[in-house]
Length: 270
Length: 270
Image (cartoon, rainbow over all chains, first blue to last red; front, side, top):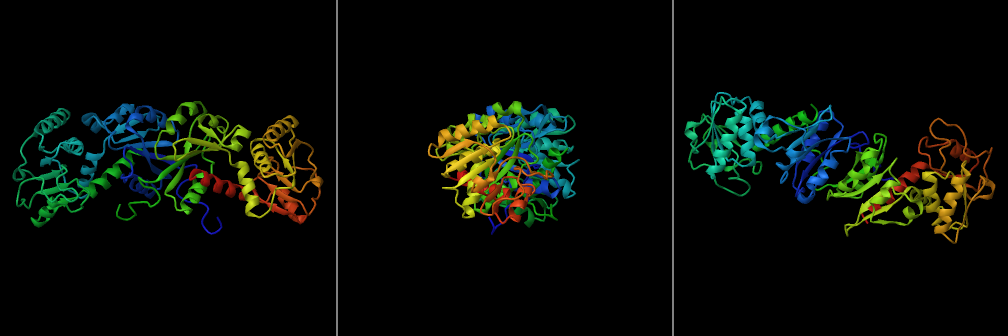
């Protein structure tokens, strides 16, 4: 022990604990990223991986939440929908989507659940000073990320939100749920027509990793279009590369991830 | 996020999780010290504080142990005795003492419990090259730390182990339990007579913090006596100060703590 430090400086008995619950768990990035956001704001906190098997979830989680210095939990695959049952209260996005990815212990001891995937997208636009209010938005993909983005974007009051998915029934279902929560916004399932949109949002998996395809069958994009891609890897997806070539403003998946992390930490320390 | 690191390097989805369970929890030092020992050995691991209320212990702990990347737990006040029930198997010190302060998940999935307070004392002597085998040992204090030290020291085969406590019944009880487990060692409760000892071990709280008293009523100590004090604060207790003045070799509470941490991490990664 004499030739190395006998203490670390990032965890102590006073450290507030947070966790990410998933199966599998090794691939998650929340531990290093959310911990950095919390400590960067001056909080004595750490977010650790918690590998819980699906068959153990319903018995383990309520007991884990009894650990008194646990401040909050993040949920990833396959627990986002099941985690709703753990919350004393669901916040607006979670109520529309029926899923949460964060649960925070309030000062009053009540657990509040919210889903931040979509709010991260909205936050990325806000940080770049690009308004969504009053715009015609085309969203590609109505899966988990897509439905969360639909709900969060609708709350920004675009004039129109068109949702396209290869599974038309899924697109119509998400559109109906989001429309029901945002009466003043024209939300509907429809075709992937970029020419009649101001903002194009890709929340489909097309273009991820080594997939060289575009999520929309076009050769070019109008230069006034703002193009967003939720994909994190690669950072420059085929869609974003085309958008840049066409002179469009672009917003990337990492910006959404950073926006989501910031909003989650706001939520954990509200 | 641009003006500070957006990732920390000490926790990720692959990090193995350890915890210390206690009530209260803020004062514990295991998070910074055991984490340093684990990472210093090259393990991707972190030990976090887990504040569990006594009324929640029996329901929370069995579920917490279902978290798959949890490698082990440390127990502190008031849980060392109750934690025995969580182990599939108790190791030798724990069987004698009826308490554990560490629980490790083995490669076979079985949870093994052991108490390392006394083993830390023995490890401190070993690291200093001071044998306990064949020596006459006088132990002051038969509480939690004292009983663990008695059991661990007896396993080193001293010729004689005399246990003194202000509560004579407690001393006799510990002596009987330790004697039963170590038939070849003369273990008995007795007077605090340093003149008939080779090694003096203080495991009583006398001399802690601002307490200027000696745990034994003497003005001097034989210079051949080896003097140990389990107290961590202050590092130089009144007993150790007197021992130094008398030319005795001394071993301190921090050396015991470091020894205990090393043995615990051996156990977690056995």
